[in-house]
Image 1 (cartoon, rainbow, N blue to C red):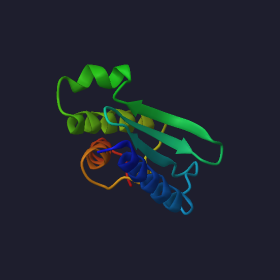
Image 2: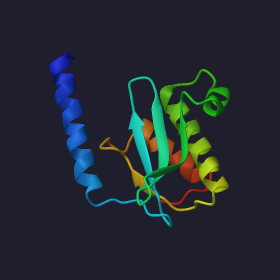
Image 3: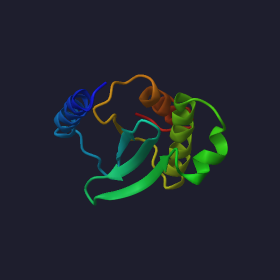
Image 4: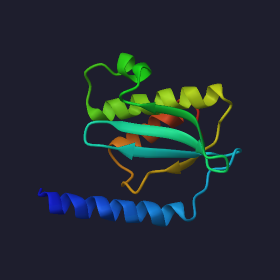
Length: 124
């Protein structure tokens, strides 16, 4: 894949994300769970859009996740990220979120992160 193709793909994802974000808004009662993935890592955070504050965050580079994920695949790591994020969110008494997939398709690593968060008690 050339750099031009990659830029087209990235631009299309950003356009999809903007289109969805017009309608999606995280409020204190139901904040937004935002997902970003790079080629190697995946990042997720729970955001209150009214105050512009991140309430909980986890990623494959955070120490809590590194200790639990082992040498598995990126998809297995994404599931652990979802579990850790859900645990952090429940500590600050967040039980329901709006899932913002960031313009990515809901399969693979994004789906694994969502299922990990659901298993640990987050509702969306």
